[in-house]
Image 1: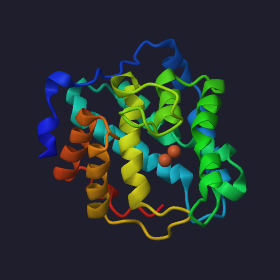
Image 2: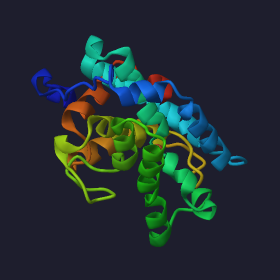
Image 3: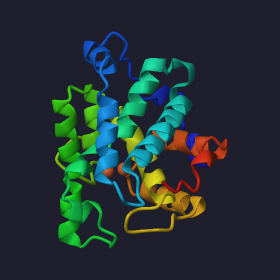
Length: 230
Ligand SMILES: [Fe+2]
Ligand SMILES: [Fe+2]
């Protein structure tokens, strides 16, 4: 039973953005809204909505964080994690439109081009003076807990910022139960979970956070995200 892995003595440290000048300044701006507009514009005319994807990933990331930290998760920390989830794919807005809006499965070169979105996103968020935890989620949400994935030049395990480790799990689930530009039909909740368990065994997800995600699933907290269409 995966949830037996949820050992509360091994919990990651909960983010504490309160009082962080960067977070305070970030919250005082409307940059999240402006970046959301940018996501909507980049996919205008497409059946796929990057901003809806970001919203779903942000929502699920907060659900997972709530499962992990409970009352320890402050309103500000939840908001920080929601922003990290919402903005994780912002770099896709800088990927060439023929790749970004492609309705076919990528070949190897196209896949490499799409993978640049993590660096583009981190750079955009750095320029927007986003908090480090939000930048980290953009840069590391395709980095495996064992150090695999991409961009492939960085940390592994608990050295990967916790926001990125949470968003990685939420993004993987949401990306597979919603439509994609190249996949008009979402996969089933059950098949995605079976795949995620295999991915976990291969070293992809943080064990504590993945166990928390599964607890959310088991307690129906994730049911509302099943069959996300946009
Ligand atoms: Fe991504
Ligand atoms: Fe994503």
